[in-house]
Length: 345
Length: 134
Image (cartoon, rainbow over all chains, first blue to last red):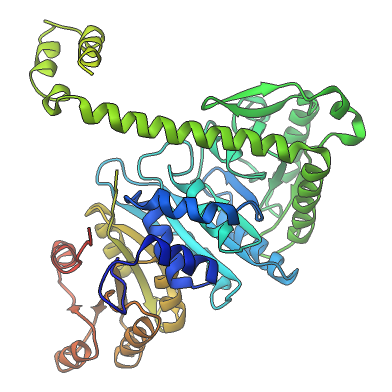
């Protein structure tokens, strides 16, 4: 974007200063620059980094149509009533065919308009498949540096395996609605395992008791012992250290019922999120998660940069030209061709 | 690696609730490769300007069928300029009498698209008028 006052592009320094200063226009432009991964994005993020680490990050995920956007809106309103500032990052999918996206979460968020203590930003996945976009974590960092006390990240409507949010958020809510599946769905691996709080939204609908029973049965089977962590880009299970396995120190995932359109159950949900935050801080789990998150971030930055450098050294025709044709005619195969191309670096 | 997308806010200011046209346009802009932020009906100029700022859009598309365009559209332009978004392209679609088209353009609206406009014309207009800064 072009800076309005001078007609020249705002510098990385002036953008970072604007973010820290509470300038909403510069905040919005900084987010764009980070989201677009422009050349100075790392410089901006680097200078904002000392100011991050204060916000509590809440992930909201679940299948399409479970009412995530409405729940996020009423949750944000509830935090505003408690006197806390709130940023919302809402993610919707990018079309794999045209690269375009229709970001519609704001339709449900009109109640948040006109409040200077709220900032809402829509993001497209831009090709990422884990439920977030590649730069969501960086955008959350910008909002954190801008001083928002609670940051709610709403993922795309997910299926069963989009669990990336768990490595971005401090507290992950998995939203279900009555009538979407039976007991077997509930014990499948994936999305339900990342929940710190399970929410049945639309709890005024028929079938809510059946859904509640299914989820509670799943929790009983789980026992809540092992934790999911992210390690080398993969979520793995780890046993909770012995002293934390003590009944009173362990976080218990419970199922909560809400009707987001009426706001019922939302106050209790907010209390539960805050209880989780307190538990994270007091149990030492926050520090552990923070270490994993930082290690993960470092690895991703290195991986992306290595990727870029390696691809830059490959001959531009290498991935499209006669090599591909040779493989197509079965004169070569992708495995040895890849070895050969890598050998040229 | 930089990945710049043109971002378009589609909004319906005022009180008429007929949003089919706005949805058709939003969908066609998505298919043209833009990131479209759809905000829905009954938006005030203040809500539209605020959303345009938070979303850092390049284009604001207003859909109006109520006849209130001469009040609402210049107000949106004015609010956008006041908050420093001088380069945002403001477009209006809907039923706009010919004699109002020039007036809207004088007030800062860049393009007016009436009934029968092909969606291709709108995306071509956006691609031709949004300067994607390097």
